[in-house]
Length: 430
Ligand code: SF4
Image: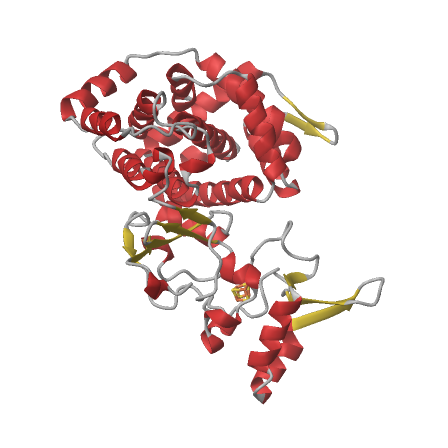
């Protein structure tokens, strides 16, 4: 799949000179002592590196070979004492990639964290934020979500794609993908409005088109869709929708109960060990008592402490928090095409649950910081960035690497009957 066969190849600004941090994953993709290599990976490395003495030395020094109980060889890339990959250079480049380019990279490295989509005649490269470096760049760089042409050599020609969207498909739900997603991007970028309003715009749009635009509909819906595009893009309509949304006041306790139930059903039981540890740290930040058996805290106390932390940090860093969450949402729209869900509102609903859970974890970690008032702006910024990036990476890894977790969460959301616009308001206002 050469990039040349596409009319256009794009990526996001934060990925165009992406550098590996050599810490692919410590939970599921790697063996206990290194980054697992398939037999094909190992053969490719041998073919490329064994042509020179320096390459031979690299192979000897960085590849670990072990035997299983049946005498079969397994290979992995050695990790250093700090758990970083032994091919990582001091300035955080991959020495394999520098030496021989993308084709030599092990399958795990050439795919993770990139997500390859083919949308009609366009090749798109986005990424999961389960990688610490993509999470850092995506959240913290103000230009991160600008779409840019894909640099030459960014991906190997034979890299498989994650998604293929056929824009000539008989079902308008798929065929109109590019236009509908472009509208979601556009609504997310209306920076004159706060994030909550932007999220409400996309929920409002999704709820209005749901009756005729879904995975089961095969009738031509283009004129109805055009009408809805025109409707949501009228400045007066947006202003009115924003006004209506700002006047809705829901019970904060109900919002918290909803999130607590979704989290209890899925995240606290089915996440990775490191994600569970993060969740416990967050709950302790809200004042939970933790012991060997778990954590204990009442919902009223969590709610009060959540609101305090949210109020304080949102007042101090409104633009930064808006940026982190907007970037997360746009990255999700790009790397998780909505066609996986039966209708757009279900897709948005899942995204809103993710945003709410991320906020819950982040504000818990921030609430656990001591003596914040005494810190200067720079110190506070550093605390916020560190927790936001770490929470996002762990959260993304947990949902990305554990399909069971998502199934748990989806079934809980379904059981709650969260399928209308008012439910979206609950999630947005959390
Ligand atoms: S081999 Fe290269 S791309 Fe893979 S983890 Fe190591 S440094 Fe990163």
